[in-house]
Image (cartoon, rainbow, N blue to C red; front, side, top):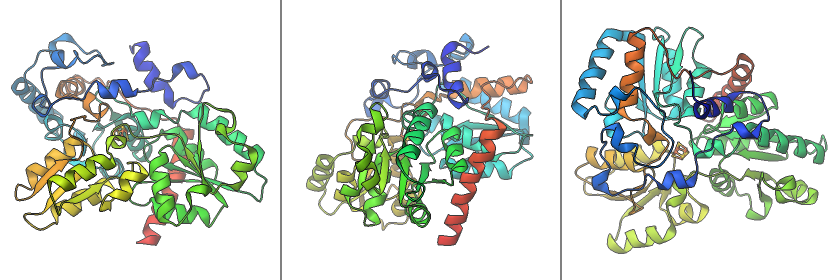
Length: 419
Ligand code: SF4
């Protein structure tokens, strides 16, 4: 039986406009996870509960298990489950979780991998809610997708709740004439329902790797774009395509017409949803200047979810895969200041001992939503599977799945055409 908090998370995937059911992960909760480098390694779950945020309650026996005890339990459960289960780990997962992953990657790669392994009935997704939804959307009906901690949402995805986006879409359709068409694009980091809205309305999904190609595709079909939910990825991509800042507006869902006049909306080329990543917006130009002062000749590489100022001050900006590839393939002795999630930066530093690699932000702030996946949760869901019980299953309605798949399929076609 789910608690009302857990239901709150699950019901963000249900078609309704009841705003009370949304349970956003707030900035305050994110900052609760900021710590020193020494504090980063995992502790028994009961100690991590001291961080004053929402955790999913699980049986008390899991709360006090040490890393070694969890290792034994997870190993035994996996041995019993064999090929029936796949464990997927997003790049931003903590070390103590990623070591159990059969595949490590970004959300789309992991989802495609799960879909191509139809012999595995259970997909345990060590990531966040929208990622598990994407896997659910792509996998066959004979597979079940499990999120080990149901409170592992994503603050960015939560900033575009279905009812707010539906309201905005209705407003935009009323203001814009038929010949002033608008194409909705949603970043992968959004709920299945927002992807479905795009699928239903001649729109598309993008990733941080293909956002430029997807925007070009959209401009061939419409005069303007509604880009959700990350305003920074949308703005940085628009600038890269030569679109002026005066042609982009930010849609504030808390204001009538997003805070704009009908005329401003008609004059815009890109309408950016007012959403952001609480992790990537921490990186600043001041941090970049400081890194360059301390390490002359350093390469600064950041993710395009960072602000425009940070992206423009960096030497390179690119997706998680671009960051990994650039650093792994760089010359021995090279130096890198990196603007992305700390778990990935630390892993890159560990795997490239011949290079100097550090996070731009001197304060260690892991993605708090990813960090909610503790090995104790992984152990619990695997133990339940051994007992024949599926807990924390992520579901997407067949209607939502159908239209979300259409938007994802369009993205695939654009990506293969542009390669
Ligand atoms: S890093 Fe940002 S976008 Fe990614 S899951 Fe965490 S909050 Fe969401």
